[in-house]
Length: 365
Image (tube, one colour):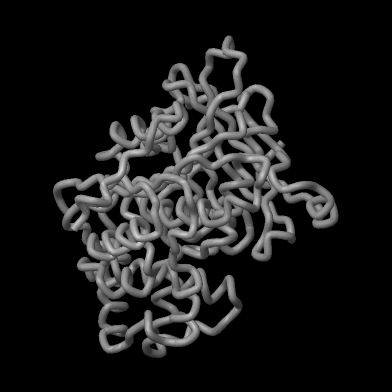
């Protein structure tokens, strides 16, 4: 069965979130890993309506253990907003997914694509609630697969856009009382969206991020793309049709588009204009959860300002959360999770083991 064959809407409404609609084994999985690409059911924008989403579920190939396995939900960074940009469809999925390492430690790893990536729906880029819901429902789907032997306890770990998704999963975890979230790890997460847009130091990356966001939100909320000049919407739509490659520099056309968009928006504060500013405020992150938190950040990240992430860490500390802060050298953004994989996996293992959570709040400046 093709994973993209749509079900009738009435069939979707009648089933519970987390229901697996289709699955297929992934022959490209690394040694020791059994993996399935799935199509599953998730709550929609309001958490009630049903829609299809796609994900990858990974489990140890050794099935001799009988105890339910802990679950690590991996929330990926930005790949794009077009349906074709779904990570599960990428040929290098396993290579560029740091959480694959957790399978060798005995965990089930579930990696949702998020709504609209891999399906016909609009992808709600940096929109917190439906994204967090899709992560929770992917964990439910993993538990519905007997071969995975997934338990009810889970940790969510993400990077960049996925850091935002991980934090929103923590904010909405109470919607799944049958599951137990025991920790959230986020590498370079956008938290205060307006501040993140304004303070990104790489102008080309900021222009591309603006294009993805404006394209997604105008479609998702069905509102006009009225920013910049007359030509600007066309530039945004074209840029947003591209997927991000972790190995290639942007094509010449994309670079030209970024430069043109920078020029068009030079005197236009996207983050201050209604309704964009309201959406940013509603989808920024609050440390309104109680589980331990890990944050990883490079000191000169050109896209997600370290200052903004550090401010969020201080807010989490003030709310009494146990915060582990991983300070990384350099100014790369896309390798935050890979640079901090070893420390993050150790932290995750300690959460499942019930060890006291480390707390760096006393030394954060």
